[in-house]
Image (cartoon, rainbow, N blue to C red; front, side, top):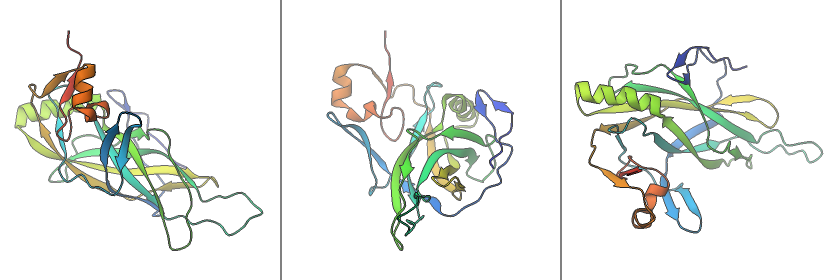
Length: 220
């Protein structure tokens, strides 16, 4: 059973601990967002994000991480009963660290976008899905903005693990995955939202203010 604490960090649930540990699922890497007008936003699973940046100049901004989550759970070779080894990914536990490994924030819980299902695979194989996680929501952005403005540009580490439940009712959890993000404070790297801007810079339809994509603002 997963137990959450009752403390609140500016609107985010802070965890008091977790009793589950399972290596049947893990985060492989961070994929790349792509955008097609007819299909919308998607993630290229076999591509890797090699340099992550996040513009903290806008406190309402958030960082969305497209994690590639792998399940090593295999299909049960029983045709007369329901499959129990598919897994629904419910969310992730996240903590922001500095480069030395010291905590900047307490650990908090976020929800997986779409509540993704990963089917079981054949023996010796695995299955994966791209899942978007809002790993730095706006309340945390405000904390990081204060940090950068007091100490200067720096790199943070997103320390996260995903959790979910199998179709058989077993709670599963990955090990920790660490991902570095370079923080910048650039109020000039902004575009005013319009149909023309969204067509010229298609990735702003997926994310903004991160990984080389300008921040998309509503200009009056």
